[in-house]
Amino acid sequence: MADESFDIRRVVVVGAGTMGHGIAQVAAQAGFEVVLNDVSAAAVAKGLAQLRANLDGGVAKGKLTVEARDAALQRVQGEPDLRSAAALADLLIEAVPERLDLKRQVFGRAAETAPAMTIFATNTSSIPLRAMADALPRPERFVGLHFFNPVHIQSLLEVVQAAQTSAATVELALAFARRLGKTPIVVRDVAGFASSRLGLALGLEAMRMLEEGVASAADIDTAMKLGYRHPMGPLELTDLVGLDVRLGIAETLAREIDGVRFAPPQVLRDLVAAGRLGRKTGAGFYEYPDGAGRPA
Ligand code: NAD
Image (cartoon, rainbow, N blue to C red):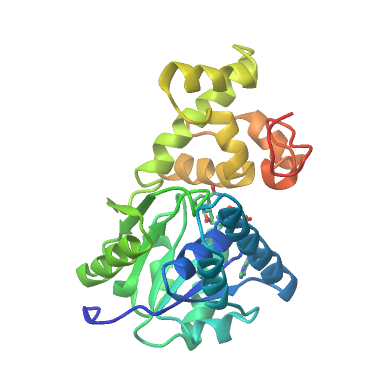
């Protein structure tokens, strides 16, 4: 059982990419000490630069004071060595690519130096926690913390309770979510949880419609934006999430839930093979000539 009086003060984020730098940012803004880890000093520096750019953007828009930005930045440090980072963790959140072997490896290595009280969390979009839990010595202290992209804007946080996750760990996760200003929901440990499964169903169908020539990508997206009041269309959203990330989720759900319903469409496989991973590479279903900007 987790100790309910246990106080999370230091948060270690493993993986400083699309999600990791955002998780580090919101944790620092909420007053936690944050350690950001990635595979190399350069990758950590890139994540820190994105985090800083987000905070600068907040200041430019008048949403954040200069003092609040500086205070948040002071609470974040980079640490490219996973074992050193894990030794500091009250809460360790992994946000490495959506590959089970990689996530298990990260948890196994982090557990070598993490204190016994550390709460471990995964930001996986789709992989059931039960497939990772045995990489950790204390699976009762393991929970899903599924953030949404962009992390500093999206208010939902899906808390995934696996069979082994203790009630006290779930309570700590819920308290953490609220301190970040997020709205948590609690979901059972079923592949794709609540959000990814529904979101992906729509995304995959949009891709099949594109393959069948039902309409252009822009018109399919417009259909959902204007017809159903979705803030983004399913293909635009796939570009934001990352085509590789969505392919990984589709493969997991095809394996775990239904091989026909969640089979990745060929267009998704082809774009990923061509390196068109969405906004982060400057092209996906759309082109982004100015980096992370608007579709051309
Ligand atoms: P990403 O590719 O943008 O970033 C992953 C980062 O992990 C990279 O910086 C990479 O260098 C680093 N990394 C790889 N191996 C590592 C290791 N062994 N140790 C430390 N760092 C390592 O991926 P992302 O989009 O941030 O996704 C990360 C996780 O979050 C995935 O599980 C994904 O399913 C999930 N997720 C993604 C989104 C999204 O919209 N992109 C939303 C919710 C959840």
